[in-house]
Amino acid sequence: MANFGEESSELTTASVLKRNIAWDTYLTARLITDHDLQLIRRYDKKNPEIQQDLLQEEGPAYAEAFFNVLRSVTKEDTVQYVLAILDEMVAGDPKRAAYFHQQSNPQKPSPPDPYTQLTRMLQRTDWFTQEKAATMLTAILAARPNRGTAETPLPPLSEAVQNILVTFVDWLTSQLRRPSHPGRSVPLAVGCLARLLREPAARALFTRASGASLLAPLLRGAAGAGSSSGQPPPSAQLLYEAGLCVWQLTFYAPASQAMASASIVPSLVDLARHASKEKVVRVALLALQNLLAAPGLDLAPEMVEAALPKVVQQRLLQNWEDEDVTAALEALKEALAANIKLLSSWDKYKKEVLSGSLDWSPMHTSDLFWLENAPKFEERDFQVLRVLLKLLEQSRENRTLAVAASDLGHFISAHPHGRNIVTDLRGKELAMRLMMHPDAEVQKQALLAVQKILLAKDKVAYLNN
Image (tube, rainbow, N blue to C red; front, side):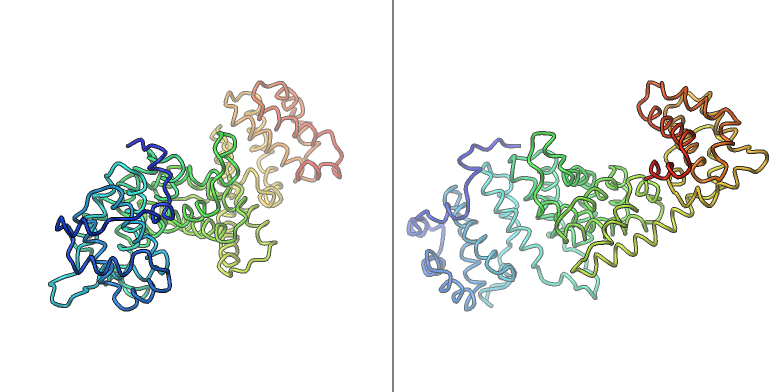
């Protein structure tokens, strides 16, 4: 990646448009036509109202005239100036991007190709040119005709557009991986991708470029992760656009798989938990909803471990203007409850305990599971409880010890005679030994279990909160 100097990388559209370009010299050098020069003079430096009227009359002609300059002129100041004009033109009304697909003269066989020149500019040595070329390329790709509608499928991409899209998506992915500009590369790339990923072809290309796995780190800043690394936290707009990218990618199975492997679920749950903007919460919830329903991924345990049910419960207490947020919360609540019930079956728990290795699956932390299944511990002379206590005594796995101690505490709370049963089976003695264990989590869970043994029943409820 190029290392741009401060002067080129900190330019703004407003500062570039203050320049005065000697258009006559390009006519003299035969780099532009007299017709182009007349159009440029008529438009350049005019107030916005006049420019708007000119574009309404002959929008495609003005777009073509300025693009002819880009095609023929290489001087950096002029290229930047024309890109600033085009950027301002489209920013004023995004529908104007359609001008670049329309013929200004019916006698010409086809409108000028807007893609090739902009793609080449992505490789130039100044950041301003790259930034504006990427913005324009995104707008023009999104505005191309025959893209289909919400009701009709997208037609196959032409070979030319396919090639341009491959090059552009690769460039955007490279900006996420190794930003050229410390503060502007990532927001630019994410903003462009948020528009491009509406198309299935772009989703496939981005996934093929290993881009899907790069999105999870962008969402982790939602909880203020940026401050611990010395970087400012991401803006709400960046979080929204990154979340929008993730949501759109969840409609493409290979992308969902790649994001799941990159631990996107905890990042999305954090986003849903901490985001203050409604639109950010919305895309996080919709992405989680799609991932939960994705065939073959089985992400429910990871979502439960990340405390998504609690996030959903808390968010349902709020008032939302966007009905999609409420609908997504209700759908997630129902789907998670069904999955927790499935994941929390007694047979599954019994099998895990008898295997001798425990993990923090949903049944270990579900109050409902323990209330429903505490009586089943009495089966076969407390076989499962005895095995659980044996794990506390003999296991060398810190995770298994921590989970077993936690389970012991849950049993004491849920069973009406849990304290006496555990004490009779030496559970109190075993738990007290683990209070001196070198692992902090094992210590914590053992302490909680011992407290539940020692405290009266009415005091135990406080430890469960």
